[in-house]
Image (cartoon, rainbow, N blue to C red):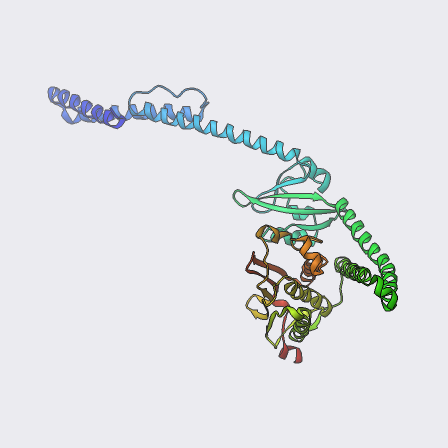
Length: 434
């Protein structure tokens, strides 16, 4: 029998007894009122016992009570037991989380919805200079005062990290990333990249120095090779070998020039102010150069350019980036293939697009194409005369112009390389004239 049905029968029984007693005593109303009062008093007693148990130590079993009050007490007790188990489980999970983050070598800080510090690990004390309990509840942006970090925390997009020197120790460079979780909570992860930055600078200096040192011997070798090729007797006997040596020296010279350009793009953090770049005229020149490079391969090279669309930037850098994309399309497109160049603008900014019907690129290669010396097909790349640095140059030029490179390709059907520039870089010809 359900508790409510049992309680209903209890009320009916009590009322029937009160009715009989009232009729027998001749005081029906008084007896019914007395019975109702006793019934309410009984409920008040049970409610009082339940309230005392709830306000007291709820770890003990609830008070025994007949009827519906016993069922209510049991329901509350079972809910409390489940809540205690859930709390113990959550507590264990929180302990594991804290133990895991405590073991992490990176500094980890937990922020609440308003950016105040809730918890941090030992690495955060050492790297960020946090102290317990002084900094609990403080805003992290107030303790680490750096404009780049404050701006980064205010953003809603944390897909990238931010790099800045620590205010209390500018020799230490940190990379900070924010991971949102829970209800508007954030996990701040900071890593000391000072050593990595030093190694990267050493690598850049080494590449730049070696490239500079190679220019002189390469020039000497090229000069001697030209002299030997001009000698009829030597050219007749060793012409094939001299030709191969000249091709390899020219290829090495191109690699050196590309390495020097990459080194300059990486180390020149404060370039000259941007100037007006007449992109349509530049693309006309590149289109003519591409047709000459194509030669007997008979590629169908077409250009569609918005003549009034110019760009704020650096002419030499953009010419280098665009020429690498155009010449790559010529090198990796079969004879008679189509190569389409397009320069246009929309509401998102300006775009330079190179579309070809070449060999295409498998999807798993695309994320690594802008790495130095990364090649999809080593043999074919060397045969075509590529240095393996072209797309790395494109990437760095676009970064310096606040742009990005988008690559779409299907093996056997061709590729599309598109350079996207923000609206702030776009300039109309009439605006420049004005």
